[in-house]
Structures are given as structure tokens and as C-alpha cells.
Amino acid sequence: MVTEQDIWHWLEDVNDPEVPVLSVVDLGVVRSVNLLDNEVEILITPTYSGCPAMQVIENGIRSKLAEKGLKNVTVTTVLSPAWTTDWLSEKGRKKLREYGIAPPENEVDKSALFADPVVVPCPICHSKNTRMVSQFGSTACKAHYQCNDCREPFDYFKCLK
Image (cartoon, rainbow, N blue to C red):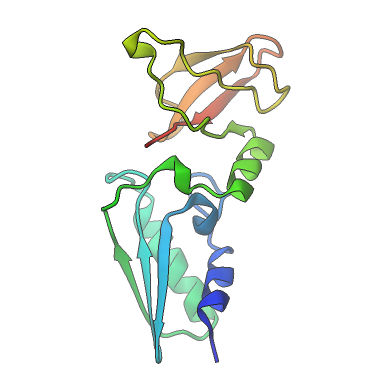
């Protein structure tokens, strides 16, 4: 008998295609798993409404569950509430750092309102002496930074609230 916990565990093997070190569970795009008799419904929320990876994620979920013998699987995209970086797991934040991407700092960048900009620690040498190179990184959900100490460039997973 398959349980909801089994399904959550299996979904930890479905990686995000844009940041393959993260599972869709780590990323927080899987919102819920509903299991009723022989049918499974997975609710997912994109990191932003135009995310081009959602079809790949949906296919990955279907494929993983089919591999485990589940045939009646529905994957439903839910846009509300909107995804937030608060949904990233602690394990996911750690994986981002180890992969060389600075995880979100859990604060909204209010520098446009005359406050100090967010300090983004370097995921490589851990220095806080960094600077934003571009608001847009390798994907729309990341910004590009550089460490002023070790001089290494790195992506920063933008904080979305």
C-alpha cells in the first residue's frame, strides 16, 4: 500500500531542471500530495508564473511516480498563493550554498527605497564583501554577484516574498 509519505519521499528524487542540485520538494514547488484510492494528485506552484521549467518538472513527477507503479497521476499547477523563497527547505538552502549559489537572505531588497542593499555572502569563501553585477543571472530567478575578496562570480537565488 502506497502512502502519502512514500510519494513525498519519491518526489525528493525529482530535480529542478534549472538548479539540478535541488529537488522539487527542496525548492518548495510541490505544494501538496493528495492520495485517494488508486489516484494521486500533485499540486505544484511555479517559482514565477512564466517559469519555462514547469513542463519538465511535471514530466519528471509523472515519470518518477510511473516508475514506482502509480498510473493514475494528475499534476495540477496552482498559481495562488504565489511561490515564495520562504518555501525553500533548509536542506535546499544548504544544497544551494554547497553548489555555489547563494540562497535568498529572507529579506526584501529595499535599496530602491534608500535603505542599504541586502548583503549576500559569498557561497565560496563566505565573505560579505560582495557586489551585484547584474539583477539578472543565469535564470530569471537569480541575480549575478561577485565576491570582492576571492573575486569569484556567483549566482544569488533572489528573495521573492
